[in-house]
Image (cartoon, rainbow over all chains, first blue to last red; front, side):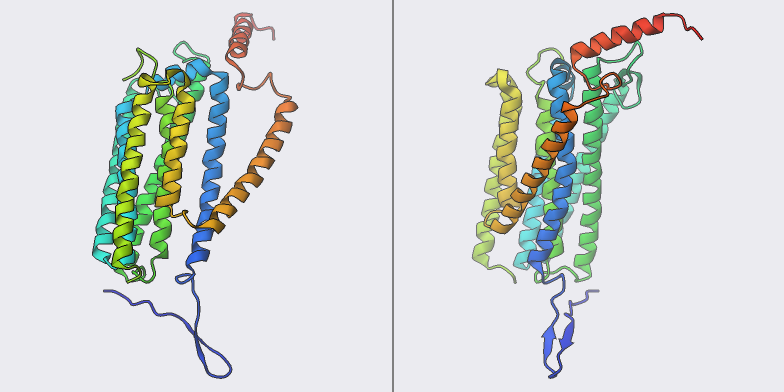
Length: 231
Length: 126
């Protein structure tokens, strides 16, 4: 059952009716507000990238060796998956703006499937790393015991699990808000006339993709030129 | 209907073109460390990342033509970066906890590790 969007009406002293501008109509304000939110996300990840760069300058060789041990096939596959998910999300918004609500919903579902695939692959990757003894809390990443990796590698893997974990959490949130978006579309609250929510969720998804654009080369590719350690 | 058929077709085509560009750049990312400029992998990878980010920001995130949002973003980044560099610069210049910090260079870490090991080897005097 769909509910048509009904704007609020205010009546002035002379009895004239005026449509109240709600957030549904304030495209520019909603867009600017969401950019402000995304800026806080960039600050968080930016600080982590700066720390990573600083550690890289201190422990250059350890970082390259640790990077060469990551699975670039799985990392690369996830990169391509996120690329296509950004496309499906964008096309979904375009279809919504064009009036093709069914097509838009199909594209959102495609994005959800791709996002889930990303998490499944990331899960396999983490699981393999755990079974190789490389995971947060295991001896290899704890300083001061016989199995400890060199200090620079402990830093590298600590940052790797932290950043890919936070990024994965953002993917999970993305799936949640896409499901919510579908619910809002089904309820008629998001439509070809009022699509700002869809627009901002697409922006969020692009931000998640944008962060991965730097996470991938930072962790998987900087040591790819080393022989011996790469998968 | 919010946009015309012509605009829809034009934007649809642009989405796919940008995807092709991003896929080509991703391929470049994957082959670069073993194919060319092997001595500058980090710089080249980051450069490719910046180009990809620009494509995503301009076309997928619709920043192309959004002068006010771009200016707002640049201004915010400039303010934050300036204060960040000043605060971190002051902190680094007056760093007081070198003995306690693990965030030290490889040589210093090795030296600290030896000192730490020697300290553990000594019997405790309580």
